[in-house]
Image (cartoon, rainbow, N blue to C red; front, side, top):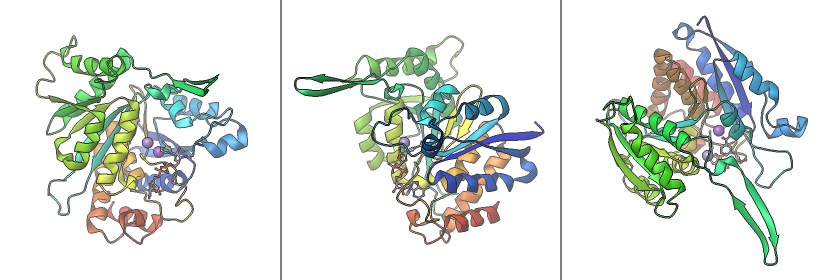
Length: 348
Ligand code: NAD
Ligand code: K
Ligand code: MN
């Protein structure tokens, strides 16, 4: 590649504060990556209020046809049903078949070279479960009754399982925990559990995953263990909703949602995205933590094979956290988004 075309979709709220920071961090990498070309794209609640569409066709077309990768910020989705509105991030993951949401959660050791207390990756299935959003309500004589479809397929469970085994294999501990609730949901979660379990026996695997140790944990007790002994976890693979909840819980362990990055990955495209939402409680104050977005840019570059650029971003972020002098209020600091970004840029 001569250049790297990156779609930028800040969307709503603090997405507009942290995605520009990630852009500056990428620009600072110079010749460690192909020359970045950024394409600004629209999506989100404000786009919906202006155009009636939270995810304009043009955004999807440009991502598909012109971009090598993308960075997404955060959307503000209303908690009440709004006619015509549908979350653009859920739609984008489906449209681009970004079936894996990979969320590394890493606490920075206080000394360089020290082992981190929390070092795990949540591998979240990204296309189905309750996020198929097939909900309905009926009116009965006893009041309203609401139902939702929870879809689990063998195909999606298998490919997220394969992704999780690959990630486990690439890590020093090679330990995979399958998260489910098949004691209650024996058909849906049972299918997920069984399909992921069978990945090592698939044709062509030929013992490749023999060194991966497999554990299982029911989702509720997984949250409990996560808080009591996070060091038992290495890679956790989960259906969509459990993965969403577990990764926010894990974020609390490392101090802030403002630190935790992710990529939405498919076989042909990758989109970096901080795990956090649009944070309406702090938007516009200039204090949103840009580190999750910068780390998301690093993950995206790493996924594309630009290891040196990714390492430089991660190292710079780690150094800023470890020094502890320039941090936003979510990490008990007094610095602004811009000051933290400048500190990272200096390290880069
Ligand atoms: P949130 O992640 O936006 O915020 C949770 C808490 O974490 C808040 O106190 C917030 O201030 C803090 N926080 C989050 N990111 C931070 C950062 N970078 N720096 C400092 N503090 C940070 O979750 P919420 O409040 O439940 O949701 C708010 C909105 O975001 C909702 O409309 C929701 O639908 C949306 N949301 C979007 C996504 C997404 O874009 N993928 C994900 C989650 C929530
Ligand atoms: K987000
Ligand atoms: Mn979430």
